Length: 134
Image (cartoon, rainbow, N blue to C red; front, side):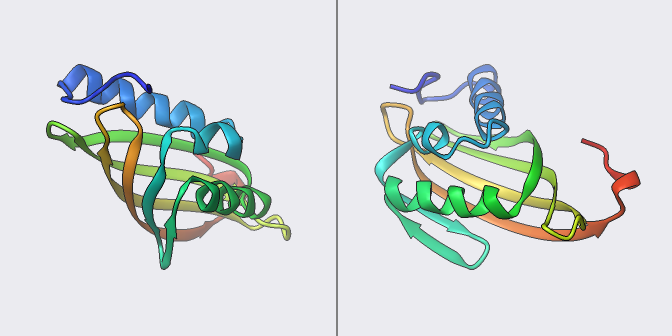
């Protein structure tokens, strides 16, 4: 199980968001993928994924491209087994071009606390290295 478990309160929803932020900032695909059900459904930008193994492979590709990744998440809203977050993260590519990526995610959790659905909308903004905030 991945506590906190639904149904969420404001406190447990905030804890869940912070746990996700902490895990993603490790940039460890194996660790992060364990937070999702075996049959988890994702939409990330224009990519649709199904299952923990495809999520792990996606994260491996993501963090190979998005170097020096740093993420901040913020609780936006919650219900019994759903959480909405806004986020921003910064990273650079192989050419040392920095980006700030903004977006929103909608999460749905199984009773055991694993995420069964994740829908992310993300926009990338090129920035100068000196404009980094995270």
